[in-house]
Image (tube, rainbow, N blue to C red; front, side):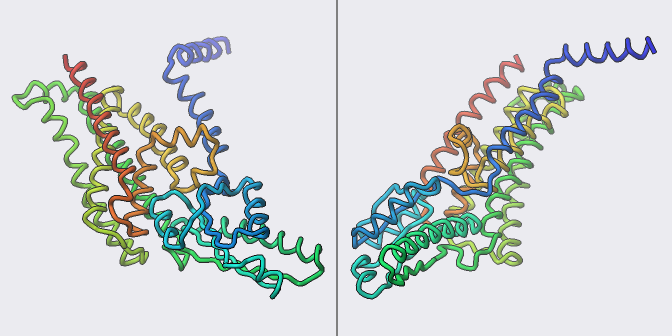
Length: 368
């Protein structure tokens, strides 16, 4: 028994002396519980709302004040013309638009009826349904208040319009998300493991001693995954269109170019990981912690970013998949022109340049 306890004590010493093992044992559960606890929420909060209110009367102001007082809506823009509605959706400035009928209060007082149009971006059908339900409930509460106050059967009719996805197909939401996750796994994780495997087995030194330049060795390790990812991109589009009935509304050429840019970012991340770690297991763990969980939880793939705490919203800005998924939804589902995706393109391009520069610098340092 004494020998057993001595061996157990020795193992504890090994664990506590190895900082990486200790980080994995304690760090992963802490990160998971914090991310999952804060990011996973069925509630939709802080929805960015635009309003077209030609009446601008006491009733419309009361309804808008109730919405702003709730935690679900942030009214960020007042529209002057109904033609602006499509533009604000394309710009990605809002997720929801409220349109009041003309002479709203007068119609309500004289006829007892008035209408409100609720327009939601249904590229995420669950979020669109939830938002519309919240707004309808607020309108219903105001209607009941009027009935109690005046003892007249007022009726306010909300007309819900689901933009870009009128049939409310869930595939419209998860196909862009899966594309981002798949490319991260194939390009970043598999590339880092492939390069680290050469270092772990000792064959990387043999390759670097060959007449080929070191940078060509690295490119030769990355290029197959670039080609495979490009092939998978085409396969996903074919399957999405033929089986899931998800159309490619936008320009296919721009969608293809945008996806290739994201693939380059993911490949550069794999190269960066390979310069940091020396074993395949470490590469797998770093890739899993740095990519899989954040992509699934903080990229907008499964849960709306607006509903997360501000600190997680800020952290999501450095996740490349967030910008890729947002851009694919615009190009593929909404069918917008490429000028409406300039923000996503600029961020991904900047990430690619920065990560490639850092990776090559670290690679040269290690080779020297």
